Length: 393
Image (cartoon, rainbow, N blue to C red; front, top):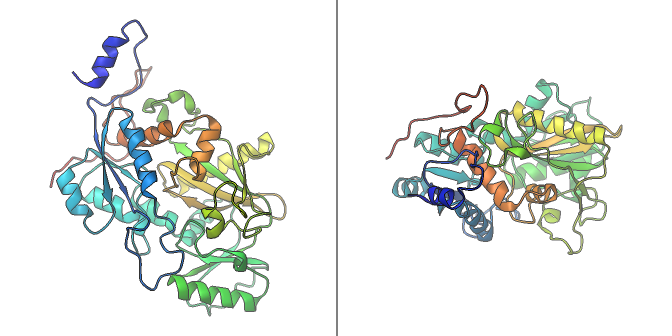
């Protein structure tokens, strides 16, 4: 008799739990790159590895998963991962790995897991590769009629400047996250400043530079959790709206008094509450109901446009006319308790860290037929997005 059957006997006077449950406990591998342990290029920038997680974050995720009766193991996302997966043989992987190098590094672990027929959480291969490539993401959004600032990518730094762009502009690496390569010097006011900053980005980060028209307005970030039909598989279906997504409160980042005024860059993202130069974080943001609904509508559309799955975080900023413009999407949002934006948003909503992690886990597991569906009218089976035969190697 497993733990869930035992709990059922203890609660026989209560209504039966109608949440979808696994038939048995799972062995869950948490896959991540550890800050200070994962390899970094010797000639890389000073903020290289900023996206990697602290071991305390990984342990917090493990505790949350184990609180629901599952077993966990941590597997570093390095060159030994294929052998570790073969030896550990997990039922499912909780993936937060950033990858150790390359244009599509956030897609490396998902690609490996699909090759080995192992279920995993969050977005799949293509969405993770696209989400890391900010230029490609903006092209897809623009093609789908979504609002984003005018932009141009520079590969050599000597390309002619698009005459339709106007100053001031903002320069950043095209394939980095966590504010890497972004600071006070990212805002440029003439072509000489632009060329210097573009060439600096290309030289230091060994990748193209993305140049956007600078958006002077308020900055927001929206947490996205769910998918159409999520109420069939969610542990807490009451959290989800009719569209299948949790309607989290909006988080506003007030950069005016930050260490890099007006810019939510890498240094600002490393600071904790109470430290000098930390930005202000307002959640729920003081916005009208109409603007709040528009921000969430855009976030979900942006999420779906790149085929992201189950969880993401979408960043936006207002233009000079007070209209929201999409900045970027993080298909592997940070999960440091009480610190990462998504965790702050979930906390403001009243969702515990444990519930946030378990919702991500169960949404992922449901894609592989690992749960029984919740009973309900006209509901036959689960919407399985990526069911694959399991194969032990």
